[in-house]
Every structure is written in C-alpha cells, then in structure tokens.
Amino acid sequence: MDYTRPAEIIEVKYLTRLSRHRADHSRRTAEYARDLAVQYGLDREKAYLAGLAHDIAKEKQDKKILEYALLYKPEEIHEDELNLPLLLHGRAAAGLLVRDLAWEDEEILDAVTWHITGKSDMAPLSKAVYCADFLEPGRTFLSDEFRREALSGDLDSAVRTVLTSLLHHRRLKKHKPCSHERELMRSLGLGEYL
Image 1 (spheres, helix red, strand yellow):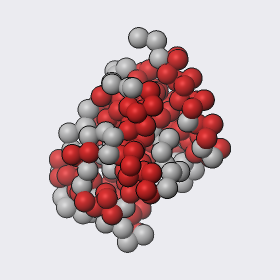
Image 2 (spheres, one colour):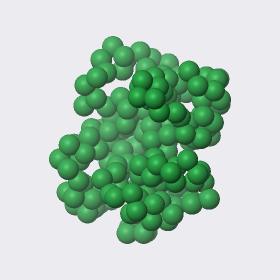
Image 3 (cartoon, one colour):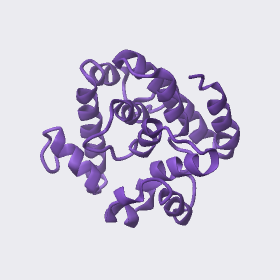
Image 4 (cartoon, rainbow, N blue to C red):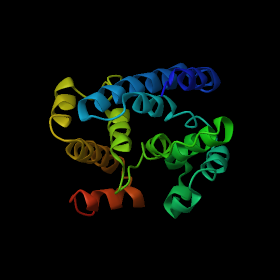
C-alpha cells in the first residue's frame, strides 16, 4: 500500500498545528521508527506513519485529550490514566485519526496509542514506535553508544532497555509507573518497580 497520501495529510492537518519542537520530534521519531522497522523486519511505511502521528494530541488540553482518547478502545483505559490525561495523548492521537481520517489499521493505531506507556502484549510495530519515540536522535540526553547498545539485541531487549531508562528518570522525579507500565515490567521480568 502507498502511504504517501496519509503522511501528507498528517503533515498538513496535524503537524503544522504543533509547536516546531513537537513537529520536529514527530518527524525524527517517524524516521527512526522506519529505521527500526527495517532492522527488525517490520513494515517500514506503517512504522513511519505511526511515528509521524504519535504526538498529534500531546499539546491539547487535558479535557480534549480525554475526549479524543475515548474514541479509540476506551475499555483499555485505566483509572491512573484518567488521573493524568497526558498518559492518554497517544490514545487521543489514535482517536483523532479514527474520527478525522476514518483510519482502521489497528496495527498503526495501537502503535500510536502505546508509544507512551507501552503494554505487556504490544505488537512488534508498537514496540518499534515505543523505542523510536525514546531513542530518536533529538533526545540529546542519550548518547549514540546508549542507542547502539539498546538496539543491539532483539526488539524485546530494546523495549526492556527503554523501559528501564524511562523508569529510572521517573523515579528521580518521584513518579511511579502507571498500570500499563507495571504490566509491561512484569511481562519483561523486571519486577514491580526498579
């Protein structure tokens, strides 16, 4: 399938309305997700689209994030996400894609949804976008060596490295993992909280 037109729509309809910083991050994430898809044998164009769309709702107000999040698989929302709507900006982005563009590709929609917290039974494309969002080259607090090491094994190993690093940063800020992250930790054998 040719994904050129959907990418153009995301650029014009959503990225032009984001801050330059956020739009640039989304483009870098899309490119990095495409690279990871090639490395791990996934659909590179779907990875690119999911990366491009992953943050289209991030700069919305909490009320709008909640409204849009309810448009895509609301039954999977946990209470702790309702208490911190920013955790739902990926699901809200998927909701916007469903509402505005009538997207039905669950593989892409799920990758957009789970890029923040991850999920214990994520599909490979979701794992690639989850990693790309954290590891993209604009994240200047990460070294190229860290990126190479994170991606030196299989995709589950990369997810484990990314999650461990995210949890370390959160612990420094005294933030606890949300329920989806705790489920992902257990599925990866990381225990309850590092």
